[in-house]
Length: 239
Image (cartoon, rainbow, N blue to C red; front, side, top):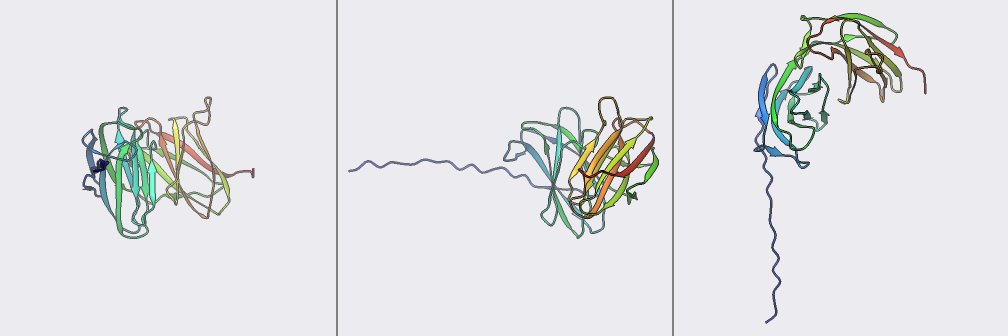
């Protein structure tokens, strides 16, 4: 009789942990551990579900210490995926403005593989941002009366631009080390701390890929700091 060749193989079933509910105004303590679900790129993750309503303005933050480089990934009801690593003083932060009711799926994970440690998830309801126009300068101040995002005071502005328009956003302060953060309609973020090694003020150049709004956040590099600042938006010269 002929010799039969036997093939052996194994099937690995990936662990998928159930998602925990998360609500607006809530803070939730969590921890990434070796027992957690692992993503395809080797990062531990916890899952959350956040109910959304049209017209809300929310800030979702994942705050952790230096041992864990927090990373947020949020899938909106329409399938759009938003991600952030370091945004709010080294924490992960995403702003949401749902156009319709639904549920967002949140993954709390780490920037690198095999990172573990405690973290805090928070979902805050945000005030309407103050409108600022190109060519305008606004004087403001960070104080304890401000909206708190990821554990620190933050002032928010909104700038409307037409497709292709170019702007330079400048944030100056002699009272604290200022940080600029912007986020467009698609959830794409950019951030600047220091203009250069000799200038601790903040500056960002931005080109509107399409007509829409750009949200501008003002906060301090060191969370306890408060004080006055000046925010200006000028038209940038063409390339």
